Length: 299
Image 1 (tube, rainbow, N blue to C red):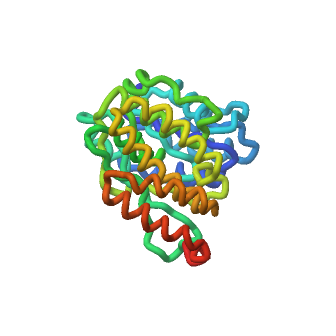
Image 2: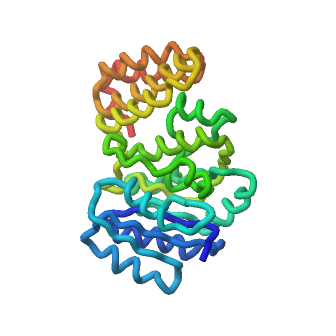
C-alpha cells in the first residue's frame, strides 16, 4: 500500500536514540507515512525497541550485517520504501509534531524540502538553541559547491521520482559522514526545485558521543574530495570564488583542531574572496588564530 512519506532511519547500537526518534514520529500530526528502521548490525536492544512501536506506527525493521556507515542502510530503506516522498531521519535526532504537516504544504511545487533544525548539545544546557541549515539561492548546484553543505540530513524530504533518477547514495567509504552532501549535489544536478522552510521542525543532537559529523582531519579530507569532484562544473570565475570560500571553511576547521599554521595559510587565501562577508570573517579568524592562547576562552 502506497504511503505519502517514507521515513528512513539508519541506526547502529542506538536503542535509546531510536526510541526518542520513534516517539517523535508517533506524535506527528500528519499520519500518512511509513517508517523503515535500517539497522546496520546493532547488538544492543534496538530490535526490541522498534518492535514496541508496531501498534502505533506503520513500521518495518530491516537488519543487515554491519557495513560501518549510514549509506548502505539508507539505500536499503529507499529500496524497500513505498512512499511518494523519501524523508531522512538520523537515529540520534528527532522531529517536532508538525514536521510532516508543514512540509506537506510544499510537496506539489517542489522536489526537495528542508528546514531549520535546533542544535541540541547537552553541554549547553540553559542556552538558547542554535539552528543548522540556511536558505539557498536559485542556482542550487553552484551555491552548494561554493558555500558548502548547509542542509542537515534529518531535515530533508525528496520526491521519490527524483531519488530514483539520482540513484543510490554513494557507498564509498571515503565519503562516510559526507555522503549526504554528495547526494544533495547529485539531486541538484537533476532539479533546482529546492524549498527551505524557515522554521525549526526538529532537533539535531550535536552532543551524541558517536556522532560521525564532528570535525576531524578525516572529515576535512572527505569534504575536499567532494569539493574537487563538483567544482569543475563551475565557470572560471566561480571556481576561484569557490576556492576562496572553501579555504575559509577549511581554515576554520584546522583552527578548531589546533593546527593554527594551516588555518592561517588557508584564511589568507579566503581573503581573496569577492564577498565582503567572507573577507571580514576570514580576517577575524586569521587574527584569532594568530594568537592561539585566546582559544581557551572559546566555546
